[in-house]
Image (cartoon, rainbow, N blue to C red; front, side, top):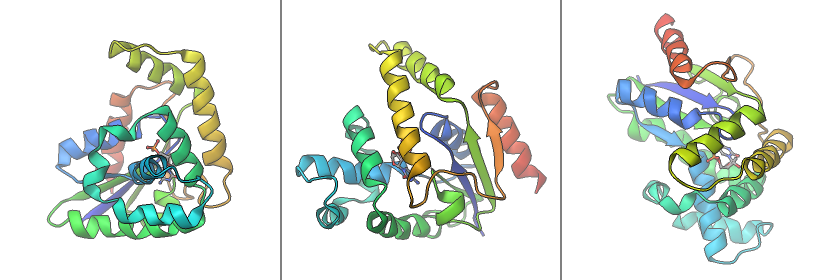
Length: 211
Ligand code: DC
């Protein structure tokens, strides 16, 4: 049976990098659950829907499928902001639960692991996940890493703006009533503030091989 690895944590903490490394090692399928919220946000923006209009937001779901999650359009400040806003809507979260729970069944056949990263994977989506990892780093560290990554890609960036945006998203993720970002009671907490992603990956492999 495919084993589920749930990786949760705040924005820009390195969840997707870690998930990708694990996926490469074990040829495992990954679902970046944030992309589901981003894909809905993209439709909300394209259709000029009010991000508080739940009925209209739910209609956008019919345009979202796994193929849409590959779109490059999913990453912008506007999508960061709208996806964060709409992710507080219970009805939307309930609808997206189904897609997430089906993922390992649909894509994990014959595989050792299926990986899902997000905010509530170990708490709400898969409370019985085989491995639950909660990544953490303070907001300054995450903003600095994001800033350096953008600069490395030859693009312009403002550390101040990134730091402000990360703080705003943290506030929304941590304080929303439905499925807030918190470590699952039986998760392994890895603080990446003083270790790099390579060391985090080694720790994760140890955890996986131990059990
Ligand atoms: O991981 P990300 O930055 O791509 O996520 C985009 C937004 O979706 C983020 O503001 C939080 C939200 N999200 C969520 O509420 N629950 C998840 N499981 C994943 C993401």
